[in-house]
Amino acid sequence: TDATSVIFRVLSTKVTAGGTVVTAEAAPGRRFQLASRAEVGQGTWVNVGAPVTASGETVQFTDPASKETARFYRVQQVP
Image (cartoon, rainbow, N blue to C red; front, side, top):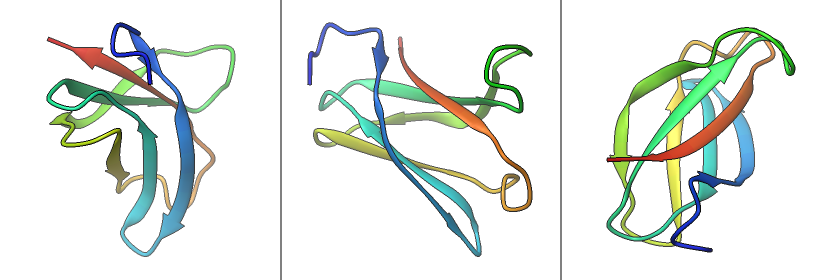
């Protein structure tokens, strides 16, 4: 993982009873925000939950609202 990257790659998504779990690349000790939207090329990115501080090379988020619909995700490093 390039710790200087602004956008980190989503590695996997898994739909569970509690929502969609999104795992992404991370840099330890840095904060990351998950965002989603319904259309791949249009629409506004909406933050999902609060930023998470990574403790390792990956970070996980849960989107509780996405169990029934398709979503597109991105993860960004935040201050």
